[in-house]
Length: 203
Image (cartoon, rainbow, N blue to C red):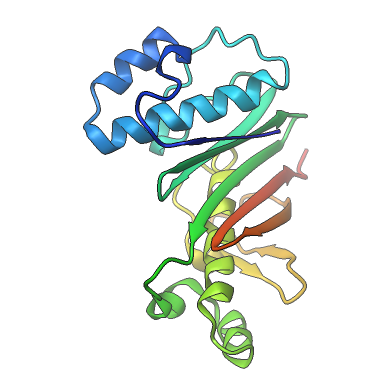
């Protein structure tokens, strides 16, 4: 289930848990806006799955939002829009979402930081487009979010490779896993949304 709201502070304020309202009130302007919109979107997505809404969804370690037991979820903010995704979660299955916008400024200089050698060669042979680079960047951001419940640390760009067919191959430096990773990619005009599902395959 996917919930989306515009990142405007008044929107959905009354729908938040009182603990979330207190937390939002302590944040500076832009961060308050993003928090309110993000929690509104996440609450909407979870309620569509039957969640009762009684618990506050505060940030946990490294900023990941708390998600009630039995569910998985993730949220993202970009250029005035907050997006959240949630689903009922069998043991070991988690979600990550990222949103990016092409915008007016191309930043292809990040390619060497984001792409592994094979990814870089394929990107160059495909025309070195900003949209293609953005797809890989956004996928790796969503991977980090999807894996955080299992791997609660920073995951570098070099720890995931996006293959030519869109499959994800993990090379986690800590030896965590194994995981089955699945990507869902959607363009709406200049806005890109990537959702990654992570399933732990260990015992």
